[in-house]
Image (cartoon, helix red, strand yellow):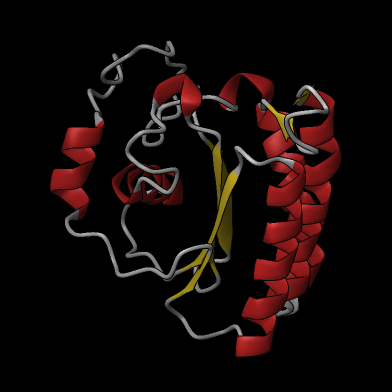
Length: 187
């Protein structure tokens, strides 16, 4: 785990960064109110057509059927300049509570995929329950899959590449449930 502001290494249980003293409470004070976002696919920039959003929601639902504990959120938003995208996405991930208030800490199996097309930056943030399985290299690789599509404005194609890249990774870390209980897998 790394500080979203100064990139210093953090211990899983750290309340704040020992280097810059950033905490979620401080991030909330700096960044203010959360923009209104649709569940699953939030496009405040209006770059995705209705058909594109439907296509992404379908793919996310396919992954959710395979991994019932997984909560995926896609966000396309133009974040203000002056602070790192990683700070904005950290704040959004925690403030929006995509997995729900009952799914905190190790029970948080959500993944936020965020893109700021104006800044030409993106990020993937896993919940604390998935974070131990993600390396910085794995997260970077997922974004590299989308890079060529996003560089040419093919937003949906880029997100689909990230989602398709997530599937084999999720399969590799999932623990099969008892087949009599469910056909999906859990983390």
